[in-house]
Length: 267
Length: 309
Image 1: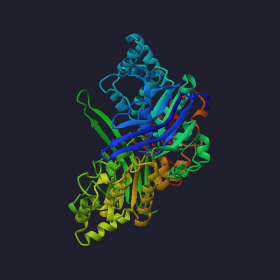
Image 2 (image 1 turned 60 degrees about the vertical axis):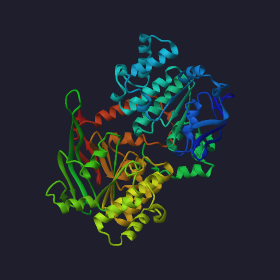
Image 3 (image 1 turned 90 degrees about the vertical axis):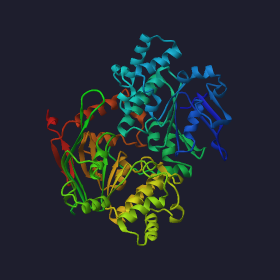
Image 4 (image 1 turned 120 degrees about the horizontal axis):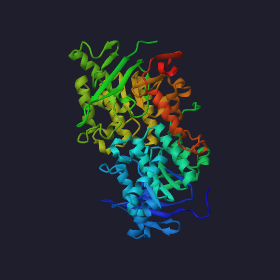
């Protein structure tokens, strides 16, 4: 799966938080690569720094968090050195992000179409009619009828909202989609529907995914490679299959053992 | 078979939603729900969000009266012949543990306050301190360090233990636990489930365990009922329902439980295949149920007359 040149290369990343009692290092010297068309899963408990990494990659981290050391290379270019204009152009078209709560990432007072149009007008200078056609196509791709374009976010179910966000994230054909717990707020059937769709879309469109979750079983189904985080460090990294079959680090084994499993359940 | 502690017979609940604009909408949150729980046993209600499982739990704690059907506790209809002492006994015996341990404890009061009040109200002041400490020890919290703390000084798992302690303090016989572990980290989830198991076995407390996490249902509940659109699709011994689901909806739900052995990219089709299948199963499952077939002892599967079309 790994190609000679990774799409994204995070090197020795350190992220600190300023607190009244000095700085707290949330991400400690983390290095990871994501290859072309690869799904990398990042797993760990809450507070281990996995979301901080995702936000740092998109440069969405806000004070009191700051990146104190390390590099983030996207196709060889340093994301941390991007100018504001370059960064704005890169978001959505180079890399996009899907957050845990779709309700909070969609604007509640704009229709679905207006949110698409915003992005398409800004990035592609696309007119209203062309944007409508494009947005309709993208919605159809994630299984939402086109007439939903004129709905407001609150008129959609949680699963549909997350699909809208996913469609938006893929519209400008980014090379990387960062997904921070994209299905945690959804129930299992809808979760499976959406992830199954992402897998198929990756085959047709071709993009890499950084997938963040605390659900190891789900990650094992979805990711090509998995990295396990503990207290700001990556403690184990490897092929999904081998991490399932033969976890090396004690913490990974502990995470596996902590989950009740149904042995021999019917499919 | 023992006499059930709690039984629901044909319980339905219809809400009339009045939007600011537009016509009144009728929502059938529960349709003809029937199940029972024996003392010291757990029944898991599983289903997706909006399936009516929490509404069921709220009917049991008497949050509202059902539109039809009866809820019996030790054989008595809980909405009939109400007396002050009867109400008090019921409120003592049936306790609720909520999903969010952050909002279910009062942030301005210590843990001592949270436990002292129910202990005093339902058991007087004799040996209060000793009972207080015992209650915390029962949920595996250290009384010395925990009593004077405020909720924000405890982790999510510890807070959830305080919620269970609060239920124990008044001598609960049935705990309605609505997703008690879904907001906890995976690594501590199991220890809270183990606590529930222990309370069940050692103290003969019955649980109505409401969850969307089917693996945990299998872990602690003897019986499982699968709900969709306000109706029970299938119910029976957890092992039978989860390993050998008979209703198409139960099969769909259980097939979606993450299983590390099944890779998503092994699936055939265009990616929408699973979605289409799920839609078809859901729309069939939403139709009114005509009755139940007993496919194995105590294992009931719903059927609809429309199935024979």
